[in-house]
Image (cartoon, rainbow, N blue to C red; front, side, top):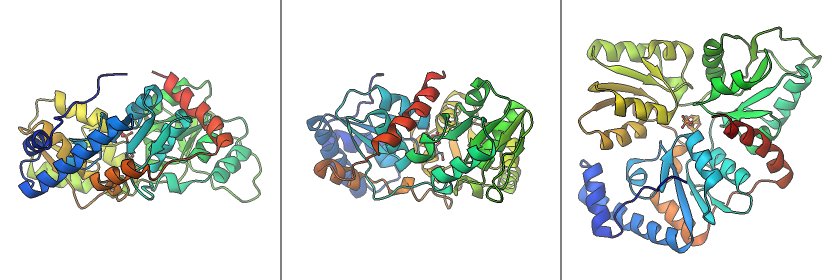
Length: 351
Ligand code: 13P
Ligand code: SF4
């Protein structure tokens, strides 16, 4: 397990730490956040808990309580390694469920009632069974942004950082890739495959997809779906020096028009390593705030009217309540968990 993030242990220390990271936040609010964060960090030790925070967490939370921050793949790897008794997942439900799939004996808490995801809601286990019946023998790759019962029907999971590597790892010309239609198109382009979106239902008769094909599904991320090529053109007209970063859940024409596409952590690393001054981030707005807190000398243009309503359900207040009352525990049916585990472990075995 890598070394965890360390933050000051006192309220005064946390206040100074947050003030430095978030200089534009009113002091009263920073003080309030520091008090809550200090209580969470004490409880974390008392309960032998680890807090995993996704890169989209709001800035005050992101900079005060997670032991580790990262993208879906990085946090899944950490969830597989932790020896703590309790995992508090500051992210969305499918991420917390993945942690539970990997750690059936541990308590996994999600500090929100729902914290869903439009991609995870876009497909059911029955949809996957129907696709498998129509394309017999074709391996199924499922994006990690799905629920456990869908993962249980699939051969291997992937995330935005390893999707092409996972597809290439399969000994098959044809794959079923679910459920993000844009990620599927972006991966099809990267792996040189043609992409098909067959209708399901009808007579349900088996179909031959042909060679070198990816069979997709019409799921979309409700956040990344909203970014258009016009947004990039406007930013470039205003700031000719801007570098454009897009998440691979964006439309393929947006990914093509961007300078870089990658997972949330890949985008963070890109900004950290680049010498450019100005960036347009086509992803959840909080991540731009979190990057600017680390790199105040860089300017991150972002479209903050496009927010992920699910990620934004996670707050410091609810995380404190969750740890105080061991509230919102994630459970996964054991028969489903065991089948889902195979597809998650197969993914984690790929570098
Ligand atoms: P990452 O795996 O890149 O962190 O993406 C997760 C996600 O939900 C992006 O919308
Ligand atoms: Fe799901 Fe999109 Fe929110 Fe990520 S940003 S959790 S893919 S709805």
